[in-house]
Length: 277
Length: 280
Image 1 (cartoon, rainbow over the protein chains, first blue to last red):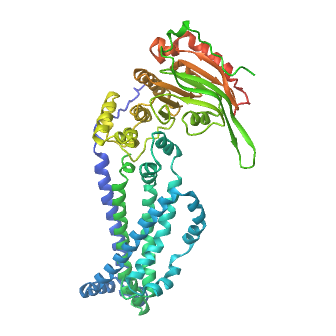
Image 2 (cartoon, each protein chain N blue to C red):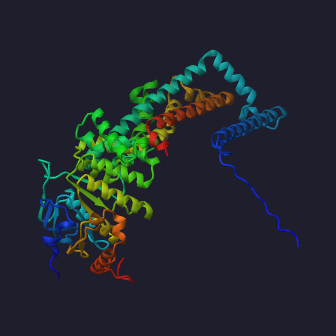
Image 3 (cartoon, chains in turn red, cyan):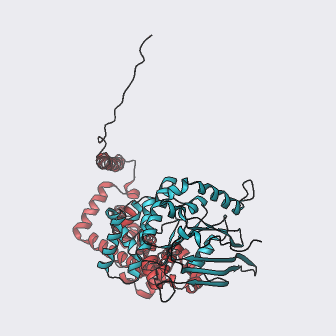
């Protein structure tokens, strides 16, 4: 009879100590490497396809053509001007609409009657594609950047209002009773319970509104404008200059990502308790 | 129908109950009927007559759905009774007695740090920031929570959060503390520990307490008196003198006393809960 063999696996305390931080960083690094490699491969295939003749650069554009146009537009300063115009109008409209909308939504907490009466209007406005209002707004405010700000404002206001108002409905009534039992006034209930409890809803509306503000902005520029990335894309598209269209699209993507990162940073600052778990 | 309240204590066996006899809250013939939108009326509470004396710990035990939360809202003055009188006496010139409460859910505000949660009542009352922080730190360190002052509630365990909720209540020095199943969301061990701790804290502060609960054992282990309620429409069925934890100095000891089981059986009988079927 042979001896039964025993196996021992020893787990040393403390050996896993820094695993989370270090491994998180290395996972992020390899993920980014894969992402970069994917993009590089796509661009390379595209370029090869164009030079071999499988891809028609007139209909698709080409990486080298895009790079050339990008360089040209950068050197002339036009790209920067257009980007600045679009970004500043988007941010102005986005902030105006999101902030005012959130404040109005919060204030509706004070009057159930008002909220009940305007509710169907808000739902109707929320369902309406705001870009349908663009021709009117451009007639009223001209084809300059102010009309684009107003468009982004209209597109974001209702979303922020509805989100904040719905947020005030999700508050635990017991928290409000608690404030009342401690002798808190209606105003204190609002500032110490309603407003902070609704903040996560407000932030999530802000996040959605980045997209809505950009849609309104670019849509408005398509219809009538004197500058901006939307106008650049629209004009180049009409001229079948696909490379310039690509430059505009890529810059817009970078703008969207940058705005998203900013909102996430703001969220971390405003909602520290959400990240303390 | 039984008489609404059976008062079993005589002057001799007052050893176990506190000496002071003025009542903090007295309910006389309190009735509550809710009217539904289609014109029907639902009688939730038929008659509650109950006197709670200063520094006394009284539990209200009832079967499920006996209008517990209605009772709670009436006692805490969030709801007005349809009939009857409620008298509160204490140090508050406006509403007689200040009532602090503690619920099953701790209701700590997740956006406030522990110390700011504790300070909530003082803040509403307009106590200056430095003064209220000083008071809060004092309370927190007394109950071993000083290290958590700057943390958010999300990082604390259920038992710790309930302790913070109790401190938030105590720091405003209420005349009456109303507990609404404060332990039912906790695991059994935490519950026993917290039971003990809360009874000793409340006795140390000479607080008058009303505990509303389903848990017969908890009521017997903690209280001076237990009021047993009937099913809806609710009235007081019987009032038992208990005082085991006061006499023995501990809830755990109360739970292992011979009288505990006798009381438990009697109250169980009173609640008249059908084990098979019947009860929802």
